[in-house]
Picture (cartoon, rainbow, N blue to C red):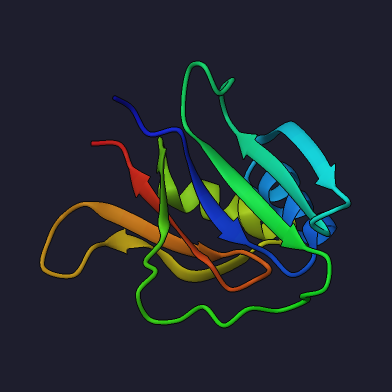
Length: 127
């Protein structure tokens, strides 16, 4: 078994695709409209889906905003240099909500950015 994807409901698909592709550097792997159901699915990732997991962005055409709730945590990405990636994300128009530094009660260097819908993405620096 392996992880295929994580699904996020998004209010504005174009805005979310811009964030994941232009700010975080992922590729749009596939996209399909479902007119009968009034929704679109778009899959983004760093690798082809046969080689690694993806994020499924689900846009219901009649919903422009979702409540995030308290159960969802975050998506985690491994990076070489968290501080450098934070600077690049800010340069590309992204929002850093926790600058790079050691995690609380530990030594692993992490940072957090936020996507346009408020979902958190953790950057974990390689050891």
